[in-house]
Length: 206
Image (cartoon, rainbow, N blue to C red):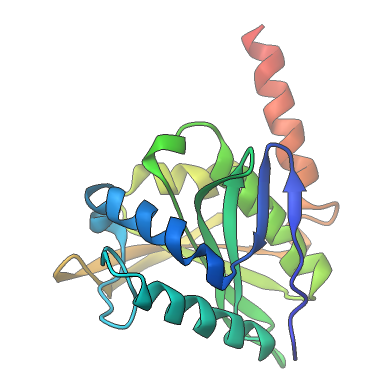
C-alpha cells in the first residue's frame, strides 16, 4: 500500500512530507539541538542523530520516502510560519487486522512552548484515522520526559502502562510509558477537539 503524501495545515503550523532537500535544515537542527534531544532519542547507529555531515541525512530522507511508498511510514517535517521546526513520524505501520502504528516527534528548542507539536500531532492522528484508515496509534515516552508526556496527555491519549527497559537511549536501556489512542476515541476528529481545548483555555485566561 502506498501512502498518500499529504501536506496538513493549521496555520501557522504545518506538516509536509519529508524531502531530500530537507537534509540541510534537518542536519542543522539536529546538531544545534544535540543536548536538548539526547536524553530522549533512541540509540540507533543507522539513524543520523547529531552528525555534522550531510550524507546520512540525505540517505535517511530517501529511506523514509521509500518506506512511505511501501505503506510503512508517514514521515513529516514540522514547520512553523514556513520554517523548519522539527519532525513527526508515524512508523511501524501494521495493516491487516491490526491497522496500528507508533508515532514519534521532536521539536527544535527554539520553537518549544508554542503548542506546535500538539497541533502537529492532532493533524497527524486525523490523517492516520480518517485519511489512511488506521485504527490505533501508540506513543512510548520516557517517564522523565514530562514535556513530551504533556503533549499526548493534553490531546487525550490513554496511559496504558509501563514497558520495562524497552528502548536503548543515551547509552542505557530505559523504561517507557505507553500511551495510545484509537479512532473510536475521536469520532469527530482530534484536531476539532484540540481547537476547542485551545479556545477554552484562551477564554479562561481572559
